[in-house]
Structures are given as structure tokens and as C-alpha cells.
Length: 226
Image 1: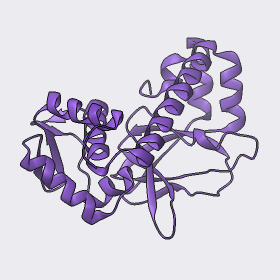
Image 2: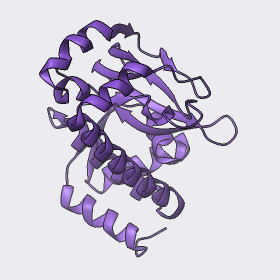
Image 3: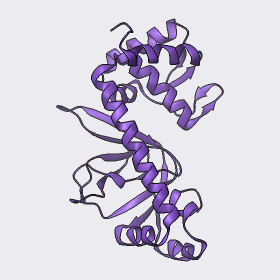
């Protein structure tokens, strides 16, 4: 129960209300939690598993906005004046989520100031990350975007036997970095030839963090190769 932000930061006296109002349900790999354009009826916290948050991008293309794992909040982007989801969320493996309807979630925020503060900081951080990603999509070459994405995923999900503990298809890498499958695969191979990463099917290991960070910094400053 204490895996999600809401459960960890609410007042002890509020926990019985959480136990009463929460609804747990499971999703199979590939199953959609909600779709872009759906009305917002509640908020979700991932109890177990991993999900991708994505949206339409151009004609028949997908842009992955973020990846979410255990404890993460999903669906918050739809809490606005129109209460319509601007994104979709899909399970990348069998997952379990906790659901709270919108009225109860809003009441929880009014009562639990620590949760409200933490959520505000989460929004601020996510906005900062989104702005950085959009800037990189517009100005950074694909190779730099992929290098940055791999470092971010390693930091978020950790490693297992040296590999990022989150298997991803080349298409998911492409959709996350705003490029095509072919270009993503070519850039991954280049990073591997330069001994910055290692590839094994859907697994990726960062071999030289300093070289990756230095390369990304050059790209952000606009001094790297196009």
C-alpha cells in the first residue's frame, strides 16, 4: 500500500479513507489504461509494472512522453480546466495500478499538505524535464537524444547485470527520442562501436558514463557533429 506517493505522504489518520476509496486492477502487457481524448474521471498510481505515456505525433506517429514505474503517478496531465487526457497510457508489462476517483483525490490534497507540496514539486520537475526534452527534440541531433535517453532510463530504473532494468524495443527508443526506427538503430550501433554502450536484443548497458555525458554536453552547446 505504501508504494505510491499518495500512500507515503498522507497523514496516518487519512489512510483508512484511502483503503476505502482505492480500487486496484491489473493490466496485461499492451493493454491501454486510458486514451488521448478520454474524459478524466480519476487518478492512477502504479503499484507494480511499467507503463509508457504517449501521444499522437504527426501522421500515424507516436511520441512517448515518459516512462513510469512502480510508485509513479499516471493521469495527472488531464487534471486541468477541460479534464480531458492529452496523452495515452499503455502497460509495457503486466501491471497493477491503484485508482482513486477525482473527487476523493482532490479532497485528499486539501487535507494532506505534505502530499500537495510534493505533487507541486513533481509537476515543476516534470515541466522542466518536458521543456528540456522538447528543446532537445528541436535542436539536438538524434545520437545525442538517444545517449541522453539511455542515461535517464538507467537513472530511473537502475540496472540488472549491468543492463538497464527496462527492456525496450528499438521502436520504443525511436518513439521516445522523436526519430524513426532505422535512424534509432543506426545511432545505437554507432554508440556501441564507440564503446559507449552495449546492446543485447532489447537490453542496453551504458559502458562509459563520462564519455556519454561529455558527448551530450557538446550536443547541448551546439558544438557536436550534426
